[in-house]
Image (cartoon, rainbow, N blue to C red; front, side, top):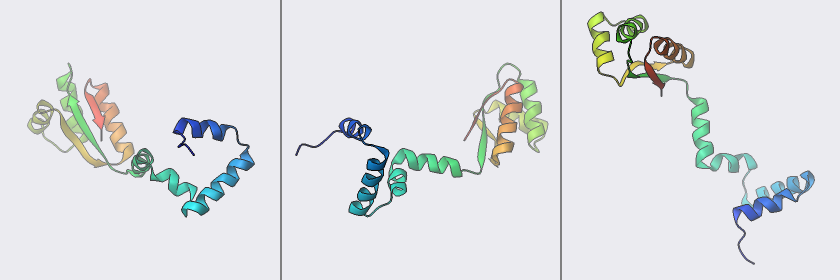
Length: 124
């Protein structure tokens, strides 16, 4: 028997009814001693997606200050406890983390505020 390609397998599955497909999944689980959920998560892309969903802390990275450097410095000061000189040094040293370990909501708000001031920001 020739080995089927992934595309050939997909085409074969398209021909099955829902009941036949359900029976196939049960048989697959029995033969390989796995569950369909474990098979779905086993792929690297699925594992990365699961890690992204679980992420609870984010870093706000200032990539560039843009044309309105003074406005960005003011926003950096309002988001952190930095003084004027420290905030200016941080903005000058971009790319640099403005916030580390922030919640998703705080990180998104900080990103929004900094971008409104003219900065280019990423979340990690």
